[in-house]
Image 1 (tube, rainbow, N blue to C red):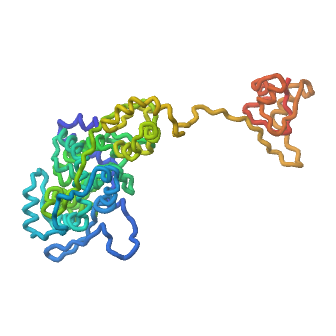
Image 2: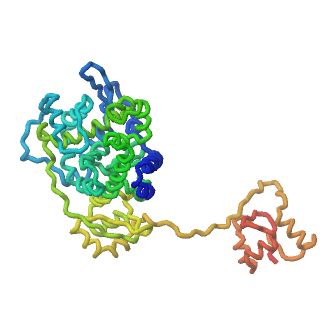
Length: 461
């Protein structure tokens, strides 16, 4: 985003520029991504009716991450390999009941710059995590050890509030392979246009939106730009979900108010639950012990390192020669969509456990020499000169341009030597039989292409 960098010194110009650039990106709110019909008449699990103190009812929609993404987290390679139940954590498997004042006090005491106020909607999101999704929260707490260092490094580099590191919890439930129905992908759920605008490469083989490191830096830049645009973190977070244009519309409809909670009723339905879900995620990641939730015990993976490849190679080739698990390769390199590292296109990284890097380097010639057919693509093809038979049986075809040209060139007389084209003949075959060349045949018969018809006469001399 070089344009943005050049205008940071001028607030007025910066705001106009950011509005134009960021608004051009394709933000698709989750509420528009997940229109899936229920199989029965039960209440949608991703929706809840909240009743405030005055008895008013409001239907809100939870982010997709609080449902299917949370469930999928438990099936990931990292979770299955490095997370296990902490048998030393002895707590009652029930959620204690606390007063509204206790929740308000806890939220207020959290060491954050971003406001964390209590509301009925925030409470509904907290209850979703601490009651219905208790086991999934245990996995989230364990999985934080895998990804939080990446998030914190990127946020710290741009001097952003570190509480934003919990945004991927409500975006993807810390699943780097998460893909929404609208095409948002990765831990930070970038849409394709936003990903490209912030430097993430996407093609058939590579999707850097799924790269935990690169996507974290791109997300930090986007969040910085959104905050520069609105000057308020709640509005910036809401804009991350539904786009700046929807926030600006809500501001206009609310008479120019620039407080998330005052434009709340004018926001898309899912965005009304998005900031409360962010606050709830910060709460449950801080006060899980008070709710008797035990984090999964994390055996941190060994340190990893990268090797740069300048040739195409598949995970199957690496696995068959080096003995590495394909699931491990996929987990450490989620940006490769089809288990192919396209090193021949551009220098490409392969992340491996430190102990396996030396083994790969020692065996890389054997890896490159092996083949599984993934790159059996032709570099050049020869076009066959087939004879096309168009004359119907029993009918005499019309004389073509070749015959007319032959008569004209011979002055209407039958000079020279001619042959009749047979089924299956090609110009090259005829030229070879008659000691001539294809170019001479074409010139002699006035042909522009390679197509000839069976039954026609061709001059060969």
